[in-house]
Length: 214
Figure 1 (cartoon, rainbow, N blue to C red):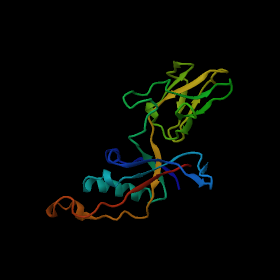
Figure 2: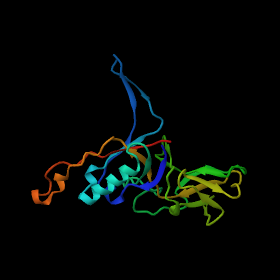
Figure 3: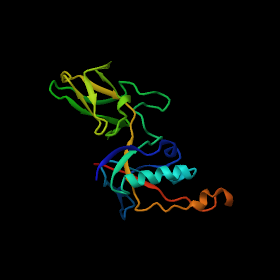
Figure 4: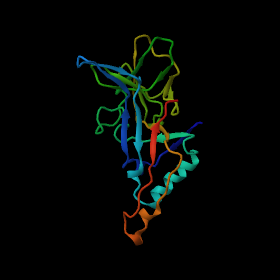
């Protein structure tokens, strides 16, 4: 298995449904109280791409990616249009001070991009598939135009010179989700696209996608 630096068609992704999932075990006690335990440390996202397919050309793009990815074998990029930026709102473009990704100690040069959700019990999500040309970096609130690079396949920002002790390392970015197909077959029903029979005849194939943590 491998990660292929390919992107699920973004025009189709705009019609996809899905989002993050968490697994929690809940035990109801005889007293009426509950015990809850998180089975997963991190959430995992899953999507249904079938609703984004609007015509036969869209379906052909998905089938081509399915074949190139070897079905469920290889992972690839997916743009989750509900959550794809380091900015606090979708109206704001990324800025270099959006997210704190670490604190310098005078020796560490590599910092993984992360996005933090919430403030009371914040959840820190690792971002491993940034859009490289979108990444901005700041040290102590000051944007840095050079002296660093980012690996778009791992989300690691590497500095030429280690940030000083106690200096906040910040970043802004756009990002994709690494996913794979979660089905062995795309059952194509061309009757759905047969204009002679009327649009909507037949059914769309199921196209499930699931986030990959590698």
